[in-house]
Length: 538
Image (tube, rainbow, N blue to C red; front, side, top):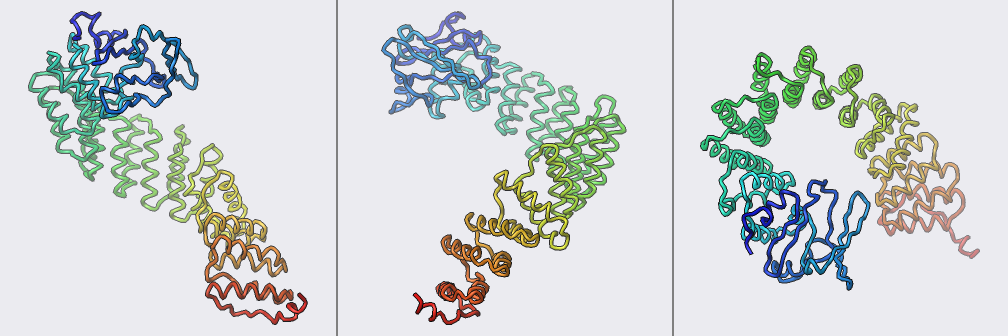
């Protein structure tokens, strides 16, 4: 049954007025309740019924529209469950009035719930049974689809506009341009803009800016400037945001001098005042090509104009100093941020810490790390491994850093960070240097159990102190563990264990270790002593 022209019978007009709508399907009505369509999408209505009759018309198998459980009720009720921020509310609806094919579900939720292959069926229903009274009602529904990120469905609906006997207006074309921009198809959006201008519609500055931004992000600056020319032809004045998009695009393709010249022209303009984002865009371009000093001059210029730099502006400079190998200057910039009441964020600290570690400024990196932790930021796993390695290496000559290395190691373990093999080995070495053999032994065992194969030097660092102390009982389990985990390499220090067994007179043990080495294809330099006396005692 086709919808009549009256509002009370037109499904989509009713939808736009927040009332109930009914679609006719081959097997019966398809009901959608939209009374609460303005609620956030987190309030999802999950249909418990499977709408079997509807899905039979769209596929050979019965497929539920949503992944839910079907609840059969003998008392004639269909149960719907509303999930709202963890609170479940169940409501019962009379099944007798719904004929078993009714779903109280927001239309946009319905579209999102359907598989891609089945969305055309809903579109066919809209084309067949629905009439938009005015282009304004169509635009309202078009806007809802755009805001819900259902761009493909919105474009399909627009392609059927002629079936609704409606003529697109300025708002329709504007939404169409935005849909193509969101779909990352600025060329098609440009075509629509030309058609819009030919029909003597006046796009607003936001539409022009969206299209310029879309071209600029792809580096198609010639097209972006063509759109700017169209703006001039229709006497639409660009805003600072429009120029910001152009500046980002110019810097993206390496046309830094043009970007700087444009910034200076904007600064001299009487109609447009550059904002801090205008300066930040050009500063970012300078930093990308190793001209951080010029970026700093722009920062000072912005401050003189009365603009307030934000954290993004400072982070741009910090990244420039990092790339140029000048991370220590970033510390001064970080202090300047604080004096100007701009709190450094996670990116600020991470960028600076990364630069200090990359350029081996361990003491400064340790200071920034401690400040970062004190303000509540968590250092990422990769940088923690790098910091630990740097501290352990430096502690070979600067023993005062051992305690810091231990603290970083313990923090990594408490946070459940994955430790890299090199970090494990350097931590073991640091524990041995600090005479913390028990921790070194435990870390070595942990490394082996984690699936890593320690190098000969690492194993030697642990076994040798144990053997010197005559603590062979703790040294031998390392051999057993590596054998069980199949981590025993050909460089395993068999000689140290054989010598210690011989020294303690445990000749049977030395023979066993010697045999294990031979099975591994290793001929130890140390030989076990005659164990015949012990064999006779057995």
